Length: 113
Image (cartoon, rainbow, N blue to C red; front, side, top):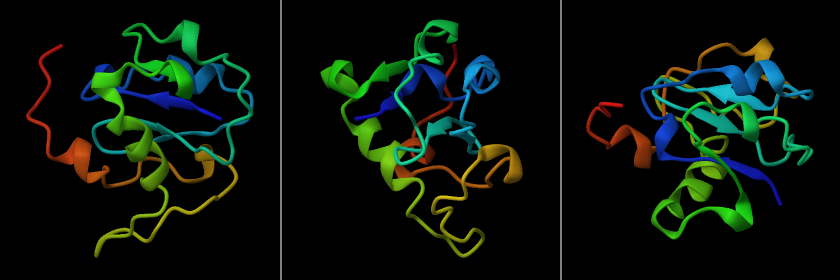
């Protein structure tokens, strides 16, 4: 089980969750943040600090955002012509902003939060 970042984060990327994460498992794409499912230790520190309430425990993810579980998992497996698959680098700080998003998120219109 893991935590998932859903739609409210898209085009916001507040980053309070990154500061709170003790294992550095929250990575930044172009339009959204992503929690690495293999690096997350399920501590829950990220959830209460998210100002837009975008972070959910996998089992508590609202049905309308069910695809965001898939987006958070697959983001680390996808490679594009511009970006190699992220894999499991063992910490987001080493990587910086990843110049892509999962196709589910990339296809969204700009979010006017």
